[in-house]
Length: 181
Image (cartoon, rainbow, N blue to C red; front, side, top):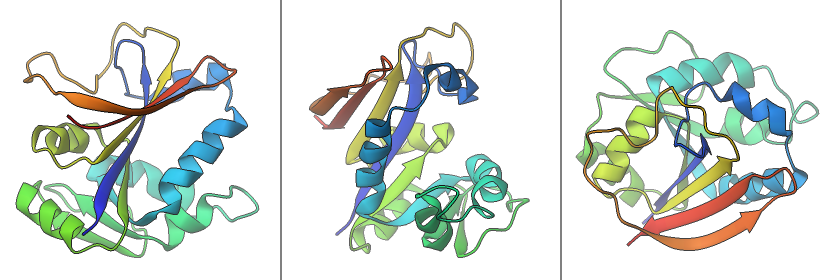
């Protein structure tokens, strides 16, 4: 049986949308090591359609020389959740259709290793709601954005989590790892 590991960049007030605000803080090499450890155990990628459409042109042309993460993103099988067909192509990939917790559960249970999720806020909210996330890696930036889509919406039910680990970086970012409570 596999696991689902989510990686998100968020502000102090929970905003994940359009994370260009992360550029102001640089990228601590230890953050790269932490993300590499998350992807290192993953055997597949699960993305919402919108994130897939954003990642496809950004990653599909990158090589190992451009970014050490390129082989993982380009060679791993990508599963796409969404009610519409993605407007971008990026192989190997499979469209799963609209969100269905049973489909995701079967995918996870049939996987040997982790399924990696990045971005995909709508998908992550649904996975949290349905208790399907085994490891939630939040890279929290020392800034409150004030507006934008938040990982947890205003009208959701409480989500209880257990802290599994934490690490602080020189750039002020804190990596918090949570699992089911």
